[in-house]
Length: 247
Image 1 (tube, rainbow, N blue to C red):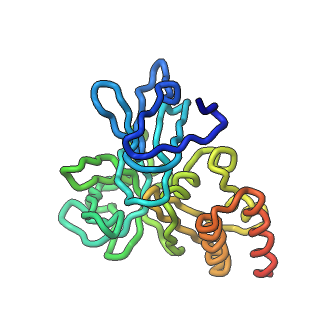
Image 2: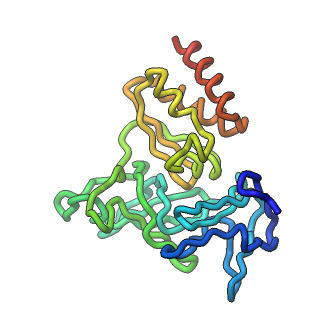
């Protein structure tokens, strides 16, 4: 039996031992990408990859690089506006799925007069609030509990990069360095570079800075880390190399 420090890999249809399934006295079990519930109580992987659990959030999922992004409620995504309707914006989350809908009033303090005027090609950082295989996903740019944007909304300027779904999930972890083993952004910031980022669970990374060179360097550093599967020490070495080339 694998210990908590050992990585566990699964194949579609494998049985997930109950000892690996997290349990919480108050929170319901959350199934992430790559895991399906088979009644009455069996959990089955739907893809091949690493089985990952989060005891605090009481969640379980399969980490994998391939496959397509499937929207899930609560996911943060970067979408591209395709067209505008009377009450909704229609936005693409991926190139291979139908558009999601984004209500024009689903922004902080938005009214019919103050709602953002978005056009074809504009980028928006949003949260998935409705995901159903029989309906188009619905997005929001405001917290349903606080009414605040909490960092969501239109993304102005910058550059958009494609990254793997696994890298996106790692970057979105609260402790991305300790848990996700992604130190590249922290190292770039420590080197004195000023920039801002937004990470979409749909495999998107937005980078913005007053310096175009910085935008390009940050994007290159993350993509090289992703594509070459660099460890933390290798990421630090890469950042030193890129900073030297930039100066």
